[in-house]
Amino acid sequence: MLIRSLRFWATIFAVLATANLAMKHWLIIAAVVAEGEPVGAELLRFYSFFTHWANILCCIFFIGLALPSGKLHKLARLPGVRSALTVYMTVVAIVYHALLADLWDPQGLTYVADLMFHTLVPAAVFAIWLLAGETARIAYKTVLWFIALPFIYLVYSLVRGAFSNYYPYFFLDVNDLGYQGVAISSLALLIAFLGLGFLFAALANLRYRARRDEA
View (cartoon, rainbow, N blue to C red):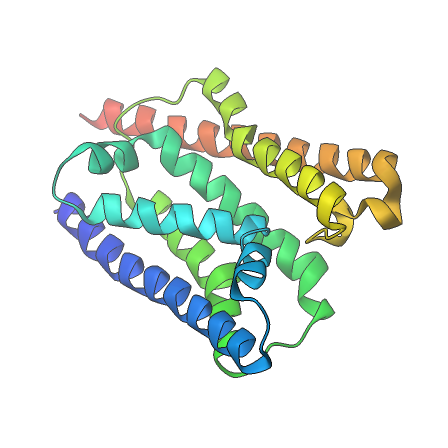
C-alpha cells in the first residue's frame, strides 16, 4: 500500500514539476523572441542557476519513483539519493526565501513557475522523503558525496562568470565580493549542505532502525 501511494504521489509531482519546467522554457523563449534577442543565450542564463539544476533532478527523481520498475526506479528508491535531493531542495527553499525573494517581483505565470521552483517542488520532495519507508541505512561517509553537485555547480559558475562576467547569485559575484568573499560564502553554503546532509541521514537511519525493530 505504501509503495502504491508513493508511486501515485510521485506521478502527480512528476507531471507538475515537468510541466512547470516546460512552461518556464516557453515563457523564456516567447519573451526573447518578442524582443528579438538570441534564445540560446537566455536559456544558458536559465541553466546557470542551481535552483534549476536541482529542479531538473527532481523531475527525473519523481519519474523514477513513478515507474513500476527499472534502473531509474531503483536509483530513485535509494535512501541516499532521496536524502541528497531533499537536502538540495531544502537549501534552495531556505536561500531563496531568506535572501533572494525580496530582490524581484514575478508576476503571472512567472510567479507560478517561481512558486513551483522554490516552494512547492521542495515541499513535494520533503513529502516524498517523509512518506517513503527507509529500506537501508545511509552510511555517513555517503553524505560527503552530497556536496559533489553543489561543488560542481560552484566551479561551473565561477568559470563561466570569469568568461561572461555574469554571476547568477550575489553571494557568488566576484565583481562585488572578490574571490576571498566568494570563497567565504561558498564555504558557508557547502557547510550548510553537509550539515543538512548529516541531519537527514541521521533521521533516515533512525527511521530505518525503528522500522527494523518493528519487523
